[in-house]
Amino acid sequence: MAEEHDVAEQKGRSENKVTGRNLTARIVHDLGRAIVTERFNSATGFPFEAELCQQYNASRPVVREAVKMLTAKGLLRPRQKAGTMVQPEASWNLLDPDVLKWLLEREFSIDLLIDFTEIRMSIEPRAAGLAALGASGPQRRQILTAIDRMFAAEKGEDDPLEADIGFHIAVLEASNNRFMRQFRDLTESTLRFSIRRTNAYAGVTRASAINHRKVATAIMEGDPVQATRLMHDLIEGALDLLLAAGGHEPRSSF
Image (tube, rainbow, N blue to C red; front, side, top):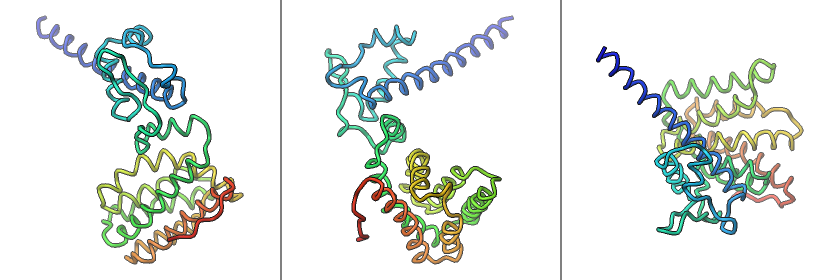
């Protein structure tokens, strides 16, 4: 009986930890989104800990953990004996996938997508070149699988968005650069918004599998110069569509 009691108690503690993590994630999402969508700002202030505990039926440690996570994202700044202060956008960690996702949910901003696509221009062509130089066998297969999925999507046999994202993520992974790999979650979050927009501006329902395959072929052939150039052209085409849609002049490469 004692053993059964110990097992039950241990299981209960485990379930409480899982519940606590889920509640913390929910609070982070709710409050983060509320800050980024400007429901909470420097003028309105931020709820006190006791209010949040009551609102979410949460313990103080759970609420404090959520606030700590939002502080790490640059959204909040605790002040000793003065509550928690909402930070201005200039302080936010825009490379955090959650913050970027909340920004995109706030209000569609083509300028935000332009800024992000310009960052892609500085990273993904280089990643393609590195992949051509040193991708492993499994990494190459991941790239080819993504291309197969893109062609399958053209026949209605796969999801075109997921296939397109899968290709770009596979190339980042195949770069074998630890910092470029960290760009994965950010890329995935933003591509879910930008791919639909650029395809719509181009008057197509999905990205060109043929153009993506050209990049993949250069990687498979171990040609870093060609892989870099083709990936650059691929992303520059998306950037030009966004610039035109936003009423901006094309920006020549430099």
